[in-house]
Length: 184
Ligand code: NI
Image (cartoon, rainbow, N blue to C red; front, side, top):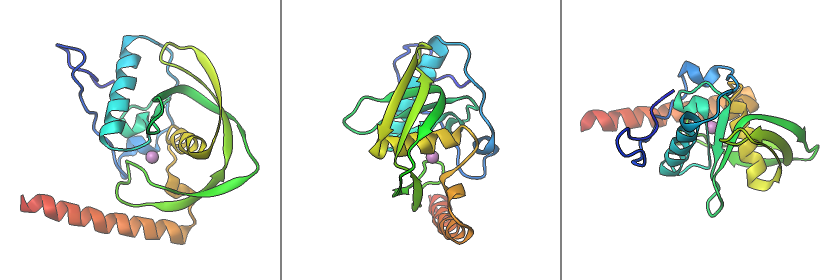
């Protein structure tokens, strides 16, 4: 587990590295968290700080190299949420389309069809069990992040043609970024 906060002051934020497409950790099945305490609290805090810094709405363990069942959600204007060992227990029959992106596939977006509402059971940083019934953006983010814990990315929901399009545009943007870096 990465050291999340500064060893000296404990409050100084340390941003975690975000792993991107091609990193094996994004394709692994995560393990349940069995010990609750300072380490998991610090990891959750660091994940929320990293998520806020990256201006995202959700971040899952594998995206910061941690192959464990944890993700965080922070919808602007609302309290950040931490989901540990989550299980989606119900999904609505009704589906909807929403444009998704992913901090692990930066710079590209695509419409994804998913159930509109979900019920999720999880534990908080203290190990306390809770259940949330979510719809709207929260339901969307929960499903996207929960997928990460099973090695699944939003592009896996697309058909081959759509996925190729997203991947080509991602490659192009990445090449441009690498060129820019090389010039510095
Ligand atoms: Ni993602």
